[in-house]
Image (cartoon, rainbow, N blue to C red; front, side, top):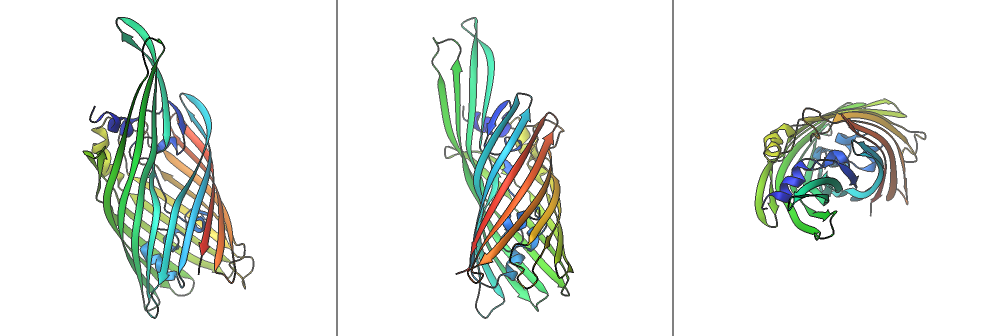
Length: 378
C-alpha cells in the first residue's frame, strides 16, 4: 500500500466529480496557478510581466515607489461536464499575496510574495461490482483530495539608468494534499473501509527578469525560470520525485494614446519533462504548455488615471496534465476589470471578471471567475 494513494493522486480517473478546483487539475500535480494580481487579471494577464503586484517577473518590482501590500481573492463559479454527467460547483481561494517596498535612496526594490503553484481540491466517486466469496457485490468508492502546491518568492529588482530594470528571485515550492479513500458495499454484511494519507511536496527554484523602456511609449519584458524538481513524500516517507518545468515569458507594452495602454505577453512551460514521472504512476502524462494574452487599459480621466479605468483582454493556452492520452486540454478566457485608489492613493481596490472555457475530448467546463484585490500603501 506504500504507493497506493500517491498513484491514485497522480493518476486519478475523473468519473463522477465534485471538485473545488478544476477537473483539469485532477491529474498530475493539479491545475497550475497563474500568480497574477486582480490588476493584471482584468487584462487577461496581458500586463502580467510588467505588474509589480504579480509574481511573474521580478524585474517588475522596479516600478514600485512605496511600500505596498496586496491581497487577492478569487470566487469561482463553474459548470463541469464529463462522461459521468454535469454539475455546478464553486470555490473560493486566495491565490496571490505580496509585500514589496523600495530601499530609500537606492534604485532597489525587494519583495516577498505567496502565490498558488497548483490547486488540487476534488472528490471523485465511482461505482463497480466485484466478486466477494464467489458472489458479485456492488461497491462505491470515493477519493477526496484537499490542498495543493504553493510558491513562496523572495525577489529583488535593480533599475539601471532609468531605461533598464533587472530582477532575480528565489522560489520555495511547498504544499500538501490530504487524501482520503472510502469504500462502501451494497451488501450490509461488509463494513465500510477508509484509508487516509498526507502527500507533501518540497522544491526550490530561481527566476530572472528584465524590462527595457524604449522611450516613453514602448517597453518590452522577458523572464526565465527554473524550478528543478519537487520531492513527493507520503506520510513523511519519500514516494517519488517529479521534474518541474523551465518557464519563459516575453511581453510588450505600448502607450497608444494618453488614454489607452496596450500590452501582450506569451508564456511557455516545459512540463513534458515530468511526462515519464507521471507515466510511471499510470497517468496519461504531461505535455509542454503555453499561454498567449492580449489586453489593454482605457483611462477615462487622464488627470486621475487611478479612478475606474477600464481593463480588458483575452487569452488562449493549454493545460499541461492530460485527462486522456494524446488529448491536451485547451483554455480560452476573456476578462474585464477596473479599480480605484483612495485615501490619498494609500489604499486601492481592483476588480476583475473573467469567463473561461476549458475542454479536452469529452471533458469540458466553463467558469466565471470573480477576482478582488486590495492594496495598502502605509
